[in-house]
Image (cartoon, rainbow, N blue to C red; front, top):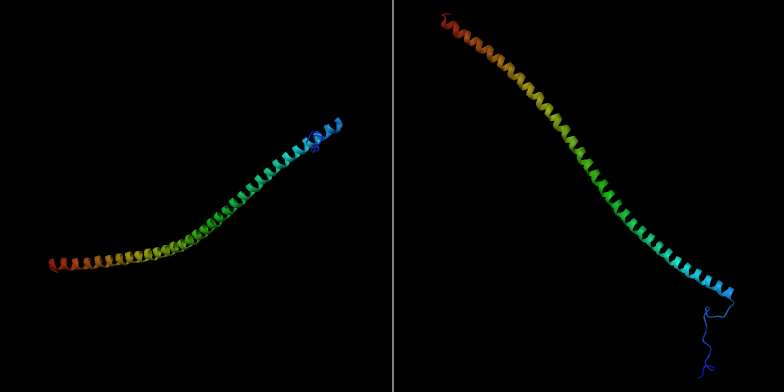
Length: 135
């Protein structure tokens, strides 16, 4: 085939013969479209990043909520133990008061016994002394 017989190659919009003002406008529109595509791609990347960060934040908040729930449960258990111990301490305090009262009563009883023994010893000593002195 000779050059004259070849079918014409399809031309793109860049190759089309058009007047200079239209060519300029076409080039400007083409550049604007490329910038718009680039901006759209960049915006999509930012959206994807934000969505990923939001997902990570949601997962982190979920884990923190679980930890807070476990901590609250632990605090509740500690409070229950503290209340039990407070009751046991009160019981021990009451028992100590009873032991103290009984110890004082025993000490009083011991003093009274000592006084009686001393009185008895005094009587016995006088009797012995009177017998020695010829009484």
